[in-house]
Image 1 (cartoon, helix red, strand yellow):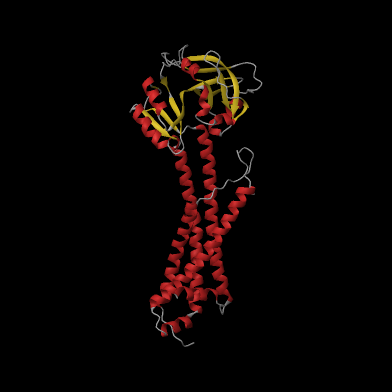
Image 2 (cartoon, rainbow, N blue to C red):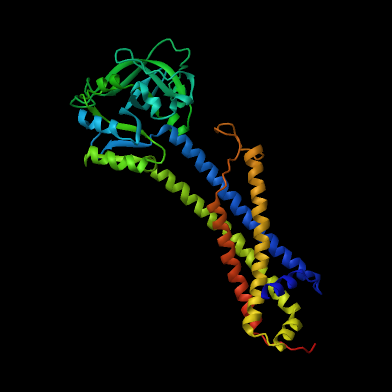
Length: 403
């Protein structure tokens, strides 16, 4: 019954046209705020998914690193135990160190020595845009460079005639300032990859045995183990690997390897959500104005209802439902509008990114049910607060049938 009154009041013709205008302004404001929140959150989801896919292709599902030192030893027994884990699909030993790469120009790089089957651990091979992912051998090593490093060294991997020279720290030297402070060896450029600037400007891949030799590493000594796990079994693999490797090593999931990045992305998303929620607060003031005008318009109707036995609680509920009805209509319009815009953007890429240095040239979107529920809950909370204030005032006033 209360809802029927609220619906009738919403549909009925008002004596003053301004009341209709104010009501529809409130509905429009709620619709715009709802749509804006959904669209922005979907764009953030799209960028987050894009970044995760890029980082996921570079970082392993799980990575074993030393807890304190730069390298750790692993026994044959531990290797057999790792191979026996059902959650582990592939793994590669890694040696990693800062180095100086000399081409036409010199540049500081992070060089990673990996095994030939490293592509089974991640998908970096698909990002090699020039040349191939060839690591060479211990005696004749090759290097796969990030595109940024290729540019910084002033070379073209497909046309290079002279080998590059790789300088790495000599761990057995008494001092880096001494003549034997660095070990050097020529490496042949085999290819270049383009993933993301952070990687393209930093990493060089080469043969594991070669880099271990250059770093004077012992058999069974490595900087890390990068592991690809079965789908949704990262945590299971992490726990099992931690038991195998012991306290001397840390086992990191993909999220833990990039914890600061993911934390910043989530923080940005919630900050934007908070800012855009202010649009809904402004819409709530419009709704308060619309309900207040409606109360003035329906004073005689309220007086009749009270004369027929309606108490303050019923009047309160009628106008509370009226406010929620305005919010529901605005929210419904906003959800439909946001859904259509997100679908069009995802299918036809209507809104483009400025510049030409991005991996994609349009704003990515990814709609999530949780975002829709969050926005609906936010609108409902704000609208309930605004409608509650106005309906309480309406119920507390004294009405008369006299004009």
